Amino acid sequence: MTTIEIYDPALCCSTGVCGTEVDQALVSFAADVDWAKQNGGRIERFNLAQQPLAFAKNAIVKGFLERSGQEALPLVLVAGEVALAGRYPSRSELARWAGLVETAPEPKQSGCCGGGSC
Image (cartoon, rainbow, N blue to C red):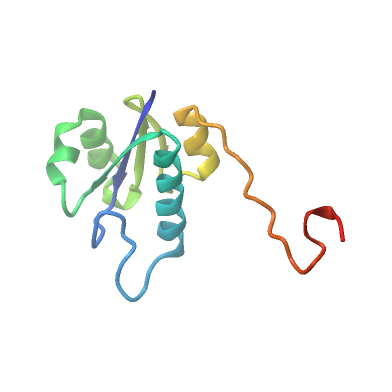
């Protein structure tokens, strides 16, 4: 299975989902990463504030930071190659890169007429 590496900008914690003003994009992305991992995806996240050596040891990431600066993060590597930079991938992109089948969420039933019959 393909490994997806996410190089995050400096975040307050491993997911960035904490504190009083949480970025909704980080909440959605954290949920998508959890979904992918639960379905067998191999995803590693590196936080610049907590794991700076991971950035320095990877030649691709180090070169990217030297050229574009940390403002251009996040950086996504798929199988060691740059796949995306500057934004977090969608669930569909994670699924495609990880070779997962994305399933549609179960439709919510409302009232007595759920499931197409009353």
